[in-house]
Every structure is written in structure tokens, then in C-alpha cells.
Image (tube, rainbow, N blue to C red; front, top):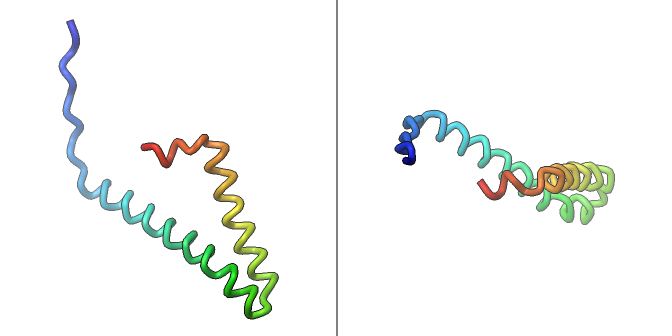
Length: 72
């Protein structure tokens, strides 16, 4: 006989906080990606390299986690 599934407690504040954190992280990386060509166009190659390294680090972290964060 299976146990009945327990309903998860509602946590609207936690959910809003988590969504806000993910939105901020997304906006940060989207800004980095958009700023790379702009920085290069303006001749700020060092800045573009740093931004590319930040994005690359995030990609490596996602690959090491086997994209588990994207599937939840």
C-alpha cells in the first residue's frame, strides 16, 4: 500500500525570493553577453575578456552540474 503524498507547505516568500535571485542572475549574465561585443567595438578588449571569462565560468559550472539547475 502506498503512502499518501504529503502536500508541500506553501512558501510564497521563499518562492518570490528564489525567482528574484534567478532573475537577477539571468539579467547579469545577459548583460555580460551583450556587453562583450560592445566593449570590443569600443576597444576595451580587457573588459571584454573579463566578461567572456565570467560567462565561460558560468558555462563550465553548468556543464559540471550536468545542467541539473536548468531541469528543475
